[in-house]
Image 1 (spheres, rainbow, N blue to C red):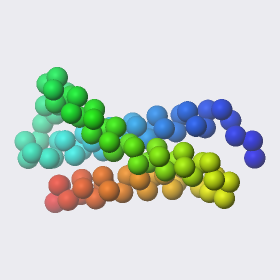
Image 2: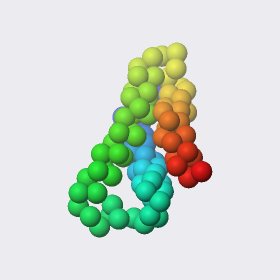
Image 3: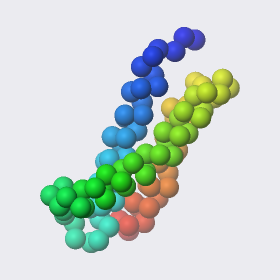
Image 4: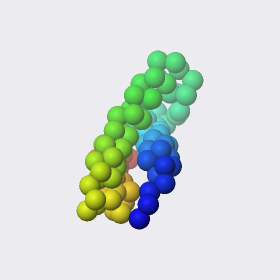
Length: 96
């Protein structure tokens, strides 16, 4: 199976976008204020951006690690999504 040059470039961007949505969910419910203050305040925005990148590190790392292994190359994308599991558990904990 020949890999395209876009496979390793587009999927991490999709992971970052997914982590941005997950981080917005966490930031919305975290303080109990229920507002998107991080979009208007400059300091809060950079804190939010750091959260996005922190959430995205594990799935992107898993993706590149599994993509190098021939045995797991075909399953790298679905397995990389498991990297969101800690953030999803934290979001569910905050919401409940």
